[in-house]
Length: 281
Image 1 (cartoon, rainbow, N blue to C red):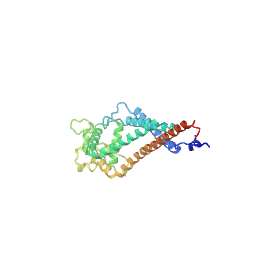
Image 2: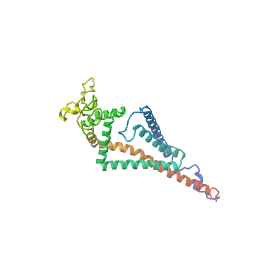
Image 3: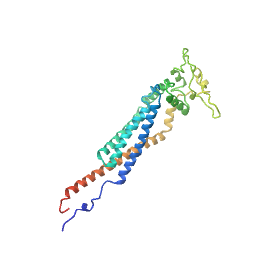
Image 4: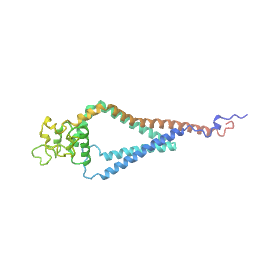
């Protein structure tokens, strides 16, 4: 009597789990859409930005950075989408490797930032000082600085007198600017009962000492305020870091599971093809 292989009645059997396959597909589809939105916002911001706007204080224009990150995310998630849908091992491996590299870069950046905190503080100080110099050159930069000073109740980098680095607020005698020896209005202490904001409240504040100026403006620099905020919000920062890491780890895990399932399915198909002509099969 002929003996049949157990695999003979399992022609429709597949090692590839539809749950893993489509979960990975929709996971990548979500971030694929997010990447396209990021690219659209970056392109719009870049096109709407005036040609003469200066961002010399920043290493990269935020709009360009948004476009670059969006394009990279688009390519990575595209590999994940097509790889999972078409069960393509090559694309899935590329997706997994790219996610692993991004995760390791983020991890290394966090560790280096913690280990070399003094150098990181110096770099932040340099960026803030450059931002002060170019305060009036870029409206977006100006709004960003004003938001930071109001949010952290601070003024300048180390102190309010750092604003003398700006050509408009410079406190030298030969400065013809009407804002000479002043600070931006975002340095001012505003009362909740104040109906109209006095944008000239920072006029001539740099010539006053700390105690006198402290009655009208914030005299502490933003660097110390930022460092204190980071120290007091470590759990929040850890949660954000974890929120960024979990989707990456989930994507890596799902892709590796699906790759192994596809390889097992390929082995099964090869086995069936080799034994299809076997009379005992």
